[in-house]
Amino acid sequence: MDDTGFHVPFYAPTNGPALPRPFVSQFATVVVKPHPGQRADALVNTLRREINKADANLPLYFIGTPKSQIEGFVAQNRIIAAMFSIFGLVAVVLASVGIYGVMSFSVNQRTQEFGVRMALGANDGRILAMVLKQGIAQIAIGLATGLGVALAVAAVAGNAIQNTLFGVSARDPLTYGAVAGLITIVSLTATLVPARRATRVDPMTALRAE
Image (cartoon, rainbow, N blue to C red; front, side):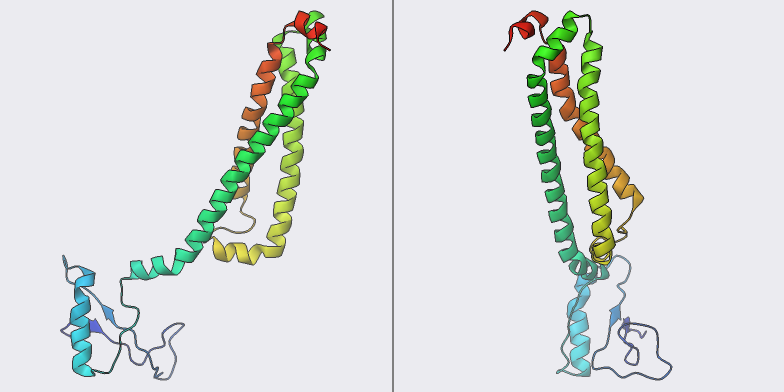
């Protein structure tokens, strides 16, 4: 580090541990530390001027702050992560619509049964519990199947997932737990709407239905 504030490690490798012998590379890394209150991007012209003084034929590559370099490095992975998030959100919406449709169809098919049960003394709570029990069984089967497939994919493509998502392993229990909890909440909400509708069935109307 000299008076101008430039550190030029000409005899250091660009990456990896330091070598026991001097290593001369065709590239050199120049680290510039701005003074307090000075903007880092304001040093670009000064750096170019000092390099031109040493050799006018030396080009400068990848000029930027560490933050900008890291953001450029992870930009592609951020796009991939955002795409996966969008696909996951669409999948959750489709699953919710599918569960709602199946449960609505099941409630409509069992309208006469609910009417008979209510005529024989079943209260709203028992009818609600019957429908929710059916929905919870379907949710449990779906979660077990989905987690099994996810673990199988993680076993096959675990390295690719870990390279794409920084700091997240292919078998991260927190991620699996959060996804399972989200799917359970959304699925129960989609099941609750038809279940509540089943409790409002009029026994006489249901008994007269075909």
